[in-house]
Amino acid sequence: MGYKNVCVSCRIVKNLGTDYHNFHESNCTNCGENMIFIHHAFRAPKKTDDKAWKVVKYLIDNGFRFGHQMSEKNYVSYPETLEEAKEFVEKYKK
Image 1: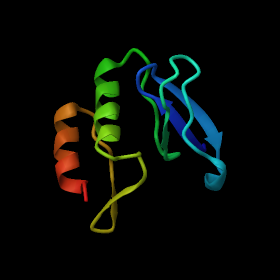
Image 2 (image 1 turned 135 degrees about the vertical axis):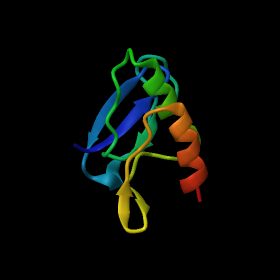
Image 3 (image 1 turned 135 degrees about the horizontal axis):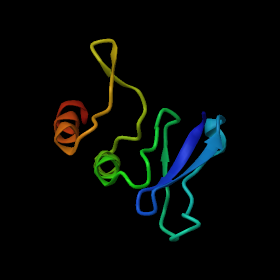
Image 4 (image 1 turned 120 degrees about the vertical axis):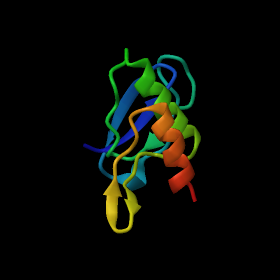
């Protein structure tokens, strides 16, 4: 458990530990692109799961960093399909 940097292009996740104040986005060691700093709640799909990674990319591109989403005092699960992700973004993007 801990905060993470993710490279969506290479499908690499680097665990950063638990001290939020000591972290920043970095470059991917594989492709050199910027890695995205995300919440420790993120669970990466398998590298071969193309559909799941499209959902991850769509959510990240729309500002979601996999922190806890709340709806009427309840936690909301992140979507599993691209169609669900589009509805999710419309509903929770503020």
